[in-house]
Image 1: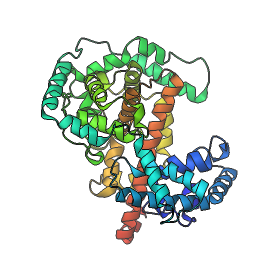
Image 2: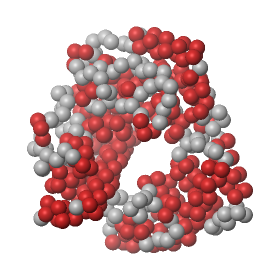
Image 3: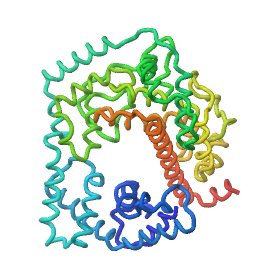
Image 4: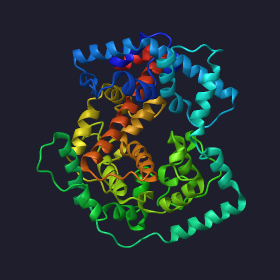
Length: 442
């Protein structure tokens, strides 16, 4: 909130701002945190809650960068105009250009729309030259060739039939111990229970992934929000992909899976060529949890175990008889840490007062309330893509504290997402029905 208030006092930063005047999430992630605030170097600016000194320091650092930020916004506008002129459609402009615009602003100051257009064009060609042929257009052309599409469909069928479907043990106790170890890293209290290495050695990730395919336990994957179907289905090749229409994690086509990898990569030349990406993704999509690395399968299993114990509305609230998946374990230390943080969220509490307690089902607050009733679903839908990206880049998780940072980071991301959604919903309600809102709050 401090950052939001400071940002609104700046001028000339509209291209880096959201519709309500605050900084865009990518502005915070790509520019403010790493380049302006630098919380690692300035600890008082770190953390969700700032002291008075931290708030003053944060405000001072942002105000000191006001001219550079305004110039960054101007460069971003120029790069977008030049991008359209060059008919470049590849990648997300904010992801690709924000940090380069800050660099240009720092070195050259605000751009001249005419004199600096050549510099903008050179920057764009350099940025997009890093794709080395790994473009979404190249992916679409590769997968749309009729003979190849048929061969890939056959390859998927073969890989799906070869899935391991053997009897596997229940690792609930091992996963509970792992989450306790994760929580212990938060306090660094020593004497920790078994960590991620033991879970990897016991093939916990593989076994729990196999259980998602097991018809005997029914629709666990569906209850977790990973698929629309009672049991996961073999992936299709796919003919197109778009960020706004992606399927649920285990329902995504090969096209969608590789598409998300390309979209998230700032330097695609480091990735394998398109044919290798596609072949590897077919193997991955037919593996337990749709991951090839065992440590990431363990991370998915631990995340699912943690997710079904999340209670943003409190332990006693069970609207419409919805108590979560049948395999739900009791909440451990890790869940209590996240639940405590989530239950203190002012905007989430406001959503509960206005929508949850009245069982509202319509409007933006009703949609948020529905997510709060089944918090494991938005949690796992955010965790799975992060693990998928790590799997593609062969970036395993071998340390318990690293696993906790990953699981806790996803929780923080979901909480922040809810906060912004509730804030926008309340603003919309206040603008449309101020008298009705006042009567409900009162």
